[in-house]
Image (cartoon, rainbow, N blue to C red; front, top):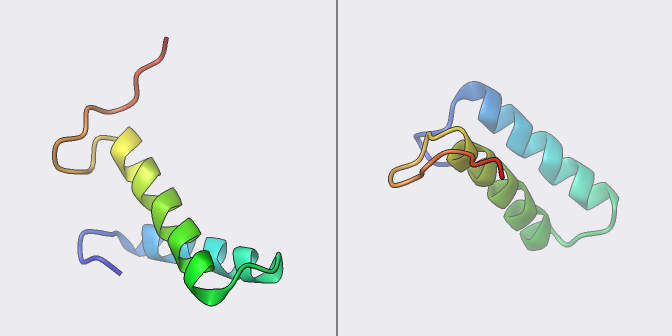
Length: 57
């Protein structure tokens, strides 16, 4: 896990990864789904470098 993630984000990552594995995703695919989900939420909250936060249209 990236060092920029909070403890809550790490727990969220593990939960999403386990859920994806339960649904039949391979280990690598489950990790990718979890990481992308956590990073997407970080970007929407403006926690990533260069992110613009969420925009509602």
